[in-house]
Amino acid sequence: MVECQLPKLKVAGSNPVSRSRIYEGQLPKAADLLHEISFSISVSAKQGIPPQAWLPAADLVRIAIFAHASLHTPIPMKPHKTNAARLLDKAGISYELVPYTVDENDLSAAHLAEQLGEDLEQVFKTLVLRGDKNGHFVCVIPGGDEVDLKKAARASGNKSCALIPMKDLLPLTGYMRGGCSPIGMKKHFPTFLHETAERHTAVYVSAGLRGLQFKVAPADLIRATGAVLSDLIMPRMPSL
Image (cartoon, rainbow, N blue to C red):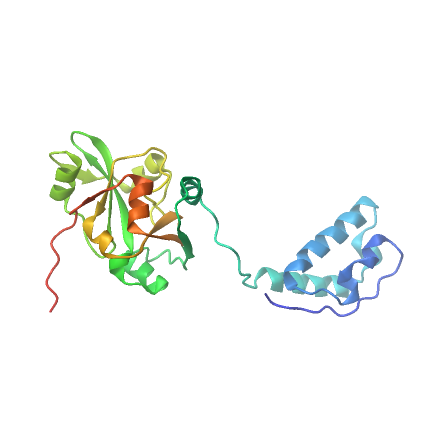
């Protein structure tokens, strides 16, 4: 949190505005400045006192500069608790909400893993597919891999399947690309988790919002989603 000090301002009159901490040079934090300004202007407006009557124009400019600075100063905040997180809370499942910086030009799992400082093997992506027999289902696979449609169809009891069009993702699940969580979709779909997940003490999946991931134990993810461990990915190219 950035500290800021205002110079002591001269204010004529005895209205409540003049007693605000803004004018006493005692404001402890920049983030409080907007609240003080809003309160002061509100009181003056109710009393029919125009700002020009109790504060010189130069001081109005000075306050505006401080307000602008406070708006553009990063303020640490707790991660936003998503509906998916509330569902985990209700189920008594432990997890960690991990924020990261979103790059709208690169929503790849590789970029996400880099942001998190974690191995790509631990960062899982959520895919929604439609089978020819059983309808929609979900595959959760390592971020660096591609889903094998034949394996996915076999795991889900279909003869064939395909990824749903991207335009259908939001209306079907309630989630947008880059923020699709296997937890808390509009409707629960059969879910399949790639078998390598159980090799890790914790994996990352979307918390239902771009910029926010769950760090959760694989067993707890299975418990939350009813997922079945399956082989779901295309054969990996041997490393050179």
